[in-house]
Length: 258
Image (cartoon, rainbow, N blue to C red; front, side, top):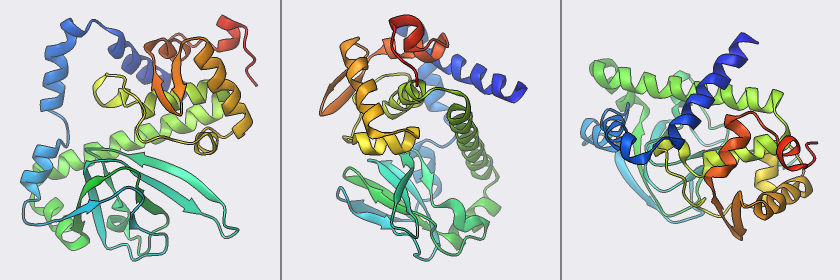
């Protein structure tokens, strides 16, 4: 349980950072952006001449499940969704990547074929770096290698937080957390509309509940003024209270929490 508490502490620290006075934190945010482990400026300067640019429209695949795993990708702009399809044809959501994210790094660990499908969900600019070039870069450029490792460790922390969320939190709290993540609060502390539009079916898969439950929670969130929801979703800061103060909507608003 100590590990769970540490993850919850990290989550609360991140949330508290969002709610501090913007004027007071603006210099800190700027410094954080400038010293980001792998900013677009750093990546593009380091990989100049090594990668090839891909300009993809929405709904076009970067790679598909079963394709050769021979390159790693970096998102400059846009969004890329990772899904996996079972032998029975059931599709499951795995992850959503945005600007500043690498994906497809499994090839660096010996993966020979893609275990999932990556599709651009909005018009996206992506850099493709073949495996051999990336391995050489990590070997020759110590600074970049350290920053790439930091990126992977942060992703691992996120995966652990997702697992803790799935194991210990209610479906309403998991949905609230997912909406906050999709609104990009992790990136710069600013809450924005969720782009692209995401279906209730996909939200249900990610949260691990049914579409009807997601529909129920979304309607309740909207009635309570926690989100604006009319096809597209806009998340309000008030939704943070469910996570930061460890409060369920049952405790505060009289909503069920099954």
